Amino acid sequence: MYYNKVEICGVNTAKLKTLTDSEKHELLVRSKSGDESARKKLIDGNLRLVLSIIQRFTNRRENLDDLFQVGCIGLIKAIDNFNTELCVKFSTYAVPMIIGEVRRYLRDNNTIRVSRSVRDLAYRALQTREQLQRNDCNEPTIAQIAAALGEEPEDVAAAIEAIVEPMSLYDPVYSDGGDSIYVMDQLSDTNNTDESWLEDIALKEALKTLNERERAIINMRFYKGKTQIEIASEIGISQAQVSRLEKGALERIRKQM
Image 1 (cartoon, rainbow, N blue to C red):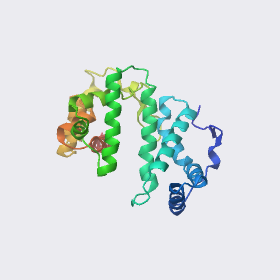
Image 2: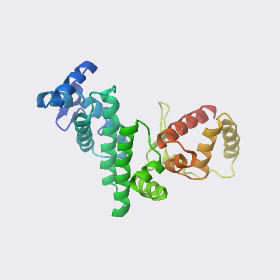
Image 3: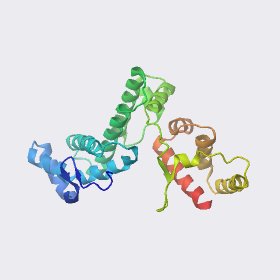
Image 4: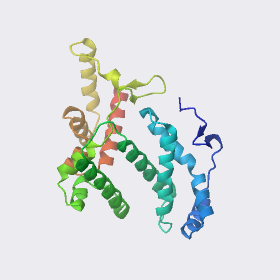
């Protein structure tokens, strides 16, 4: 297993360096002026950040060495494109860049084939979203992305959804520090049992503790089968906000039940 692996791509992860914020700023300024040694020190000093990010994707059974290399590409892009004049921490800018690079790699290696035209539209939409995020410092809506591309919002939403990697039956959906619950554990038939009847009552009571927006999101997401992107477009907030609200609502439901 890779989870306890110490050496990745020839790098001893137990001895990775860390940099202070002041050191990062100094090296970034020097790197922007063409100092290659400063650029290399920045890369070496942020490898621990790359490692922490790619560990989020280990349940996908991807080769950790490959993910680490892809994450490093995202880190290098972040270093080369970071604006030192903005009052933003480097890690705040680098994390989504690294995650984006890893997700692109996973999409390109997806076993489910998507037509070239749909895939191209999805990639253009994701690039446009990143550009709008940098310009406005806010998560753009599907409508805004579609307007920037000159495409229909429905086509953009469908294209982005098409390249999302499918969930594995072995993906964990909940863990409280003990044994994890996996997707396959939720697929058993529990219709017409005393347990399901009691769970229905408990669920209805738990839903009452949510506010109106949270209930609407849970209803659209799990009862109407809508995606987070579709919900975001319908209620006029970003997909990231939908994700946060959904996560918080599910956590409160679990605690109530």
